[in-house]
Length: 197
Image (cartoon, rainbow, N blue to C red):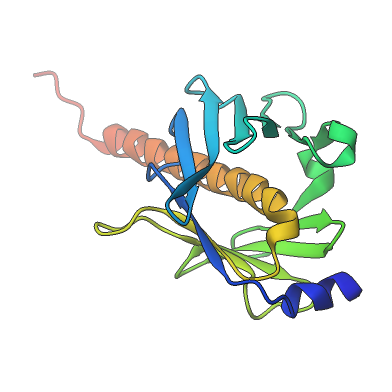
């Protein structure tokens, strides 16, 4: 596919989108490129029901993610699909793999791309044309550096799809981790001996 060849052979440099705060679950976050604000991310309420990503240079809404308990989550890209919402499950399909974390296959005008859980990067995005070398991956926060999303060269044309899908997979993982932690705490409390005290 020509678009995948363009992706691999692009002359641009790889970049890091650096998050101001170490958690995407922050109600307000800023994403920087080369120390300049590129996007602001706002999330309504602690339940994370709606996340909006604004392009700082134009102040226009670039991405909206609407999460629902009862219906399919939706994502809207201002510059894609005529600005109409897309069901996340139609755009980025989760595939369960036995004894592994699920993968998320995203369809874009540039081909299929797959988010996988990665031991080093937490999340890594691979193109269908090259399932061995990620085109994007998370750089988790450390004591000396903030969280970042690394993008290889050639990803500029669908940077917002990568960012939107990353926000979705990272939030899903954090929700599962939170559920697991809560479940562990409940189990530990239940296993304590009963005392009449």
